[in-house]
Structure formats: C-alpha cells, structure tokens
Amino acid sequence: MKWRKSSAGLVNLFETVMPGPPAVQRKMFGYPAGFVNGNMFMGLFQEAMILRLPTGPREEFLKAHDAKIFEPMAGRPMREYVAVPQPLMRDKMELTAWVARAYEYGASLKPKSPSARPKKNSSKPKKAKRT
Image (cartoon, rainbow, N blue to C red; front, side, top):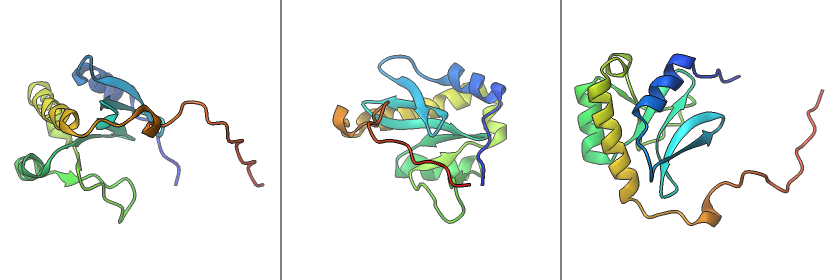
C-alpha cells in the first residue's frame, strides 16, 4: 500500500499548533512530527494528526472526542497515540490544548540520547529495486 502525502492544509494546521523550542519539528517516515528531548509527541500520517498521550488523558480524549487509537496499518496499533478526529481539528483552541498535553507527556519521558535518534545520512547503501 502506498502512503499519501498530507494535504497542505493539514501541514499548515500542524505547523500552527506545533509548540516552539525546545520542541523541534522533523520528518518521521516523510511526515512532519514534533519531538521534545528526542521523544515524538505529535505528528501527521497521511490525512491524520496523531498525539501521544499518557493513559488517563488518552482515555479522556478517546471518550470525549469519540476518537480511536492510531493504527497506521490494520492490526498494528500504536497504543500511546490517538488519531485526532476531524471536528477537533476544526477547533484550534481545543486542539492546541491537547497538543500541549501531548508535549508535556513527551517532555516527561526519559530523554533519548543522540545515539538513539535516527541518523540523517546512513552509511548503508540502499538496496536496488527489483523489477
């Protein structure tokens, strides 16, 4: 299955609600993602925005917004991440509050050492495509 790029509108919304430093934006699987201390706390995947929340707030979010756990591939849930429903993406004030909670959770996690972070240029040669 080929993944689709996020729409310009969704990328713009992401950039609008993304917190400033010490949070940083970088790509994860080709999509914008927010990191703090090396921990991802929010991101985009196709036309979905995802937030990483701890257990209590995650359950609250799921119930309050009739939301779902983020599942990038069927049967492969990312248990700490929720998919933000469309109605919430239209409420910028509430979305910003949930992004702040995701940021706080990411900041509370053990910082990842620079060696644990993905490298930009791998020294491994890329495999040739089979035809």
